[in-house]
Length: 413
Image (cartoon, rainbow, N blue to C red):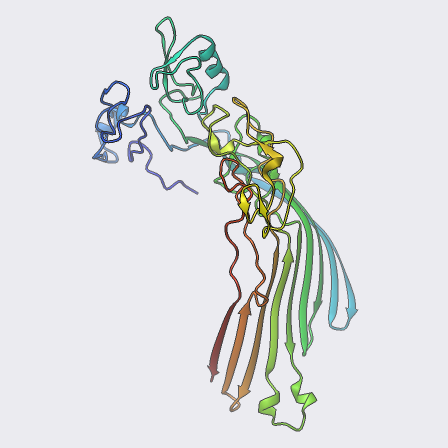
């Protein structure tokens, strides 16, 4: 795998470390000092000897620059299952199974240069002044990780990012093999294979837990356990049945022409399942004082109350869960709410099709099909917003497609 990014010196992604003028984005807002003209940017020639003495001040502070942990090891997984089959009839089989998987050293991302909360509090205790904003008492606070502070003795401190220093700004990550996963499930299937009726009914009761379901999920750099929760793809209950029935009109109406009574077929797939977990976060405010908003969480202070999304709530109509169970994180701390610990709206869907095949000759036939997706037009809500910072926290704003029908004809020869 690779990052499709232009890392310095073969790319320039620059963000001002201080507040700038709106109409002149290279002038510091507080004193009018120029930060230097960054663009247009001339790419260096790969392999050129001049690159050995390249002036890197043009690229500082570095933003969006990923790095790889030198201690990474090859990921591995353990899979195990146990199943029992029983013949219910000549054409029907029942299968009961336990299936599990353990994943180790899975790929994940963490902040490489977060702000240091203790150092931020120390600057405030020593009476520092934020030279970017002029603030004092306190000077260090949310979104000041890259600011320049001055102590009463005149000493200047360049930001609170102490891991890699002020040369590295926001959104720099380490790619580490530090995540783990755990999946356990009970699975039951009933399958029938016959000339007239074929069906497969499958039920799964499962739970999937991990630290980072996707590569874009940042694990909490201070404590990996704070990021451990339900996998983004976890579905607790999932029942799916698919069926195909060759309608025996020819046996029921034997006196009618075969071209009229033969070739009728009904197919369908029905699914009834739990929804996917809701990602809980507090994306705005930088209350953790680390500049790592992707790992900031609110506090969980009570049970989460789920209700019908068609009803109203504190944040308006279509509220799926009441926000009263959460409160804002406290300054300098990560909230205690898990990233994913309850599921969103479930899925109740049936796709249905009916076809008629008319044989013209031994090698030619004509088939007509009518198909409907979500034939019962059941409203299936997508997950609500799980961002505590949003005014739509807990509110459903979209749904899966409504009933869709289509007709088709096919000629075989």
